[in-house]
Figure 1 (tube, rainbow, N blue to C red):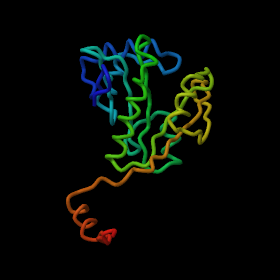
Figure 2 (cartoon, rainbow, N blue to C red):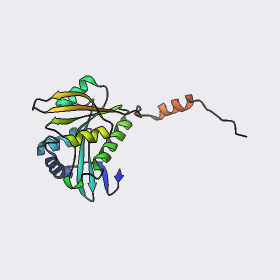
Figure 3 (spheres, one colour):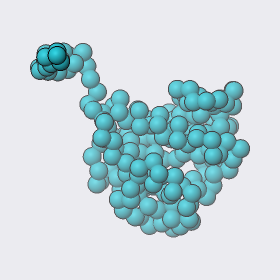
Figure 4 (cartoon, rainbow, N blue to C red):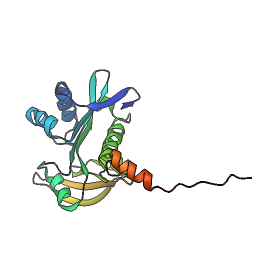
Length: 193
């Protein structure tokens, strides 16, 4: 997916140093990643996408589907209370690329992925302690609403947020398309005179 002067694509192993650097710039707004954790996420995450400008990753998003075996505390909270969803574990943008719509492009990419999978919601958390007011404003503007709060084992207080995707539909197959097309009424309008 191409947006302006950058594009969004799947992360590859050679992106890990940039992901770790962007992550370090984003702390405490995101949890710090150790190199071995980042490498494991490349394999375990449902989506690990980067926005790249030229040949350089300038942002990343880590996403897990509700059916995956991920032990994140906030993810487990949603899993116990919510149906099918995509969970945004982290999104971070390099300091020099902030304010250019890169995070919004990553979220549009995640929303498109949820739609392709027929998932009706995207979930995430935003830190309230330590405060992250810019992230809270950003997510409110993108249509996320608070559905709960959680005091985490590491002492953070987080706002648990969800965005319902009204356009999400089950993944289609040729057979389901054939059924829906054959059952769709044909409406013909009389020509206007």
